[in-house]
Image (tube, rainbow, N blue to C red; front, side, top):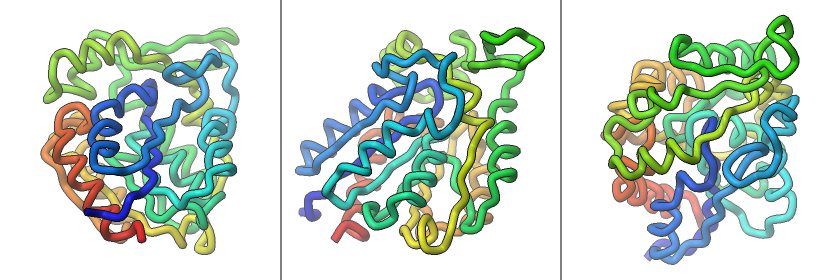
Length: 256
């Protein structure tokens, strides 16, 4: 059996800790410790997305957790959650045994903030006619939250996922603060983020973050290992057993 590890699971935009429920169960059954977090205004977190004004505020629950945790963790991010994993790895490299990016944003070492802002804003433009925006500060000041329209979530995220999981997600998805993707203020250094082993999990049937786009991210960011999984954008729903086995393999390789 793989040495028991502490997995910390970070959700993507509009999601929450709830999306990992199958993976939490499988990892715990395999003898591992698991923490699935809600970022600010997500899942059961009580903050209103309209009040989150920066990426730092959005990611603060993860930073708070890592500042106190005693274990060296396997830090796993999905989709937009990859940005939070990058940031946390930069802040606490000594506490991350390996970082795992599942169909996720992943950046090269030496990233400049301006590049991150451009790339993340583009991520919200994948389906411009399928997005719902709110304008708490007036239309003239730009949107404050963004969310994929409920009638499009299956096509975007879950086209290979069980119907009951799609129904669950449709109930629990929440708007994401625009600040979480447009006001990013951090860099990636060799001593911080660059010192943490990185593994990328590519989702081969993804309609939200295409395999080609993922290949570009991998080519630019040069992770230590790359795995592929035949799933939609959400393998925690559509391929939980396969994802579980990959995570066990990654833990065996890096969690010592």
